[in-house]
Length: 118
Image (cartoon, rainbow, N blue to C red; front, side, top):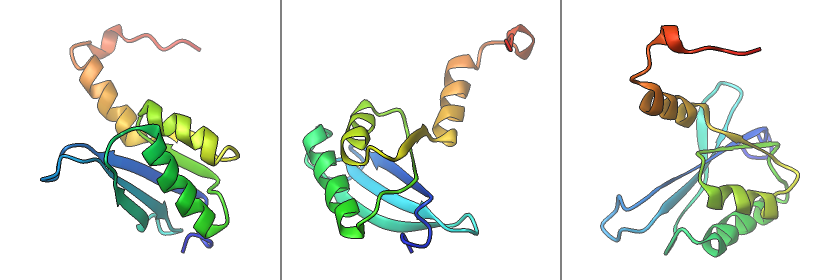
């Protein structure tokens, strides 16, 4: 599936949600119907870049190709490792995470006070 749909890859992680309190890194692709498919997952001992580096390096070395675009949350570790491991891949912030941050940080601001500059 990755070789057919390597256009966009999503990388997300959950923190301290399992009984071992260890991060779970999930990597998924998106097919032409907008459906996600699992590329890989890994429970890592910590959020350190060396752990994330190993996961991404191993996965994309296995596939023999880099994705065109990777979408993540704003995790600085992921951003750093993506630049190192798959440097020719465009890294974008996930729209869902961006919208959640907008709701969280701008929820008290009236829509009439928001000025959009061109």
